[in-house]
Amino acid sequence: MAMPRPCGLQESVRINLIDDAKARLRKFDVGTKYSHLSHKYAVLLPLLVKEGKLHLLFTLRSEKLRRSPGEVCFPGGKSEPTDTDDIATALREAQEEVGLHPHQVEVVCRLVPYLLEVALVRYISDKNADFWILMNTWKTQQP
Image (cartoon, rainbow, N blue to C red; front, side, top):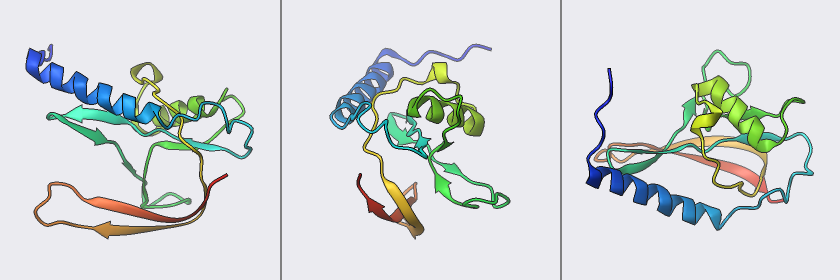
């Protein structure tokens, strides 16, 4: 069954949201500046438009996992020898974790990497909001 195509105005709003987000993100692109770092992990920050609003996709790790059970995170993980670069790592992990195929993804930029030592997740709620904010407080060090 074919999905109905969005009307012209909705499609225009969607395209404008995406174009604006891409333009903003490209200002922070570091390219391959940090490609020399070893023991790399990479995550994908999947942006999508739903109901006329831009959304960021998070994953919830299973409580049964050995590492970081129950954590809210972006799709991603440790690089493997077969990964050509950090983008390949993020795309492979996103496909494994959420079924997002690399050909469905437009990589917009690479952001500055951070070294994470300790992760603490805090829950912030607004009863009137239709969303929740999970805030990561990390001890970070910029390379």
